[in-house]
Image (tube, rainbow, N blue to C red; front, side, top):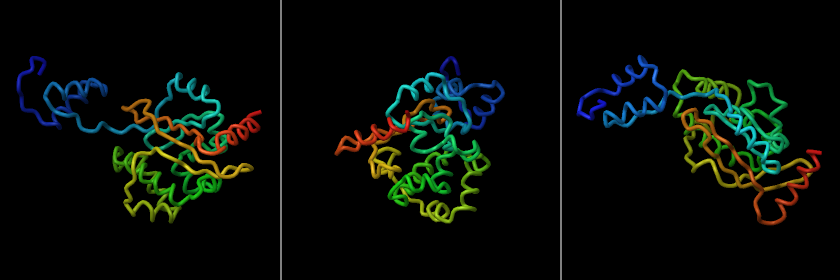
Length: 221
């Protein structure tokens, strides 16, 4: 393989070789490239550690709500502006999951207005991440648990709706402020570990940005 000769090996053989040699994701991709094959999807990872530099980035985003998700949509880190919107710190660690909160937490349900339209869009985005997990993973367990306790989740999950990437506009109803629209996007931090940063910024149209920043200043004093 190192000499670039044509050899016939199966993906199963290559995966066994990766396990025996304890290759990391980069080494695994290199092995597949040596055999002119495209590496299949790597085993999904859910729990992971947020790099220190990302914590610094979150702290620097003083007026922009932001948080970090893994493949399962567990919320691993957030900034003070994100806390004011979502109240992550109030949740026990096992329930600090964006999808769980979206369908079971009354505060988050009231925050997204209209809720149903936005919830289905986010559920469609989660479905793409679900495809990276195995049927035995904790991602699958999350879906099973939500199917048991939320009829709305169960109905939405089986609708198989398709939406675009998880970015665009979110419409939020903030306590003591009212309706504010936010542009939002999801940025990849670590592709191998499916670690993403979600960023919200008030839309420029109207006075939403000014009102939100004044509301946020009052709450962060």
